[in-house]
Length: 449
Image (tube, rainbow, N blue to C red; front, side, top):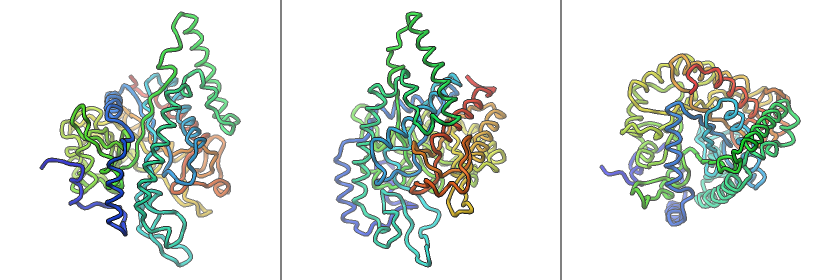
């Protein structure tokens, strides 16, 4: 049966909104299908080539950004601050490990979230859950929780504005290595991590001066711009289908809402709609793999998503939990190796380590996050495979949502600047902490390229 962008529709689709006005939804899908693509097929092909390098152990992915983007906190400063933190982390990882870092944001499309329960209750009142700004509003009122298809258009326009700014920053000089000192925000600069970063930035500037003295120009494009790709969970399928375009060069279909789309842990069933949709787009794609994954579930899914075993096509993002990863992940890696699929492996140490604090805040412990990352590296080292990246939720703002770090957030601090619309994120200091610790793990890897 020939695949087309709507092939998913006859299949079961989990975690989809119950849109109240189906005619309005159809009209908005038609509008979206006529709008320009947000990303281009050539960019997605380039990312696919870079992920192939990761699968071969020659590069490393830093995938980072908001848990869920917001319509409310949308401005140029927040985008710049988030990008700054990611650039800082990438510099730490590149300089310390000596391998290229593929920079992949959870941005310009990460507006929808699957929820563990379809409803939530406060003070005896039960309402539908908040599903992300793509679907409804977090305000706890009956009207706010009604799915509104007009939000799909707002997601498109906000994503277009975000991408426009990201391209300007990363291609227009903001990302040049001569600016490594300028990327430090005040609240990071005054922290232990910030001081450590400043030392590294000084070393980089010294190296650039040496290059120039030796007659090697620092004006080369690689030192003055950077490639930055976007990604999100392809959850709301009407939106993804409406932004799918047929490439005029190759004739292949690409989901032009982002460079990489992933399937979540809750929607990865091989016979259901999300797997069907992603099986036909030629973007690089990813799949979250949690502790309940079995060989019987996973291998047919890999066969559907990557039947030709193409390097760069498929990334697996493990999200096991710090206490489970060393027990469960080795068997999964061995099964995938035996299947012959050349996947890139990434660790998501955030989603398996969420708990509710004594103050009632959903939070994560930095120590547990790093424990899962370390377990991820240990497993790959023991099997002779390449730990290809990390996938973290972070923000460029000085929030207090995750516990710990070098300049630790304590339980009683959580309420001070708890601003997430969904899951807790690392702040800039904690993000740099993680980057330095991951860099140490990469340096100690026995199979480092």
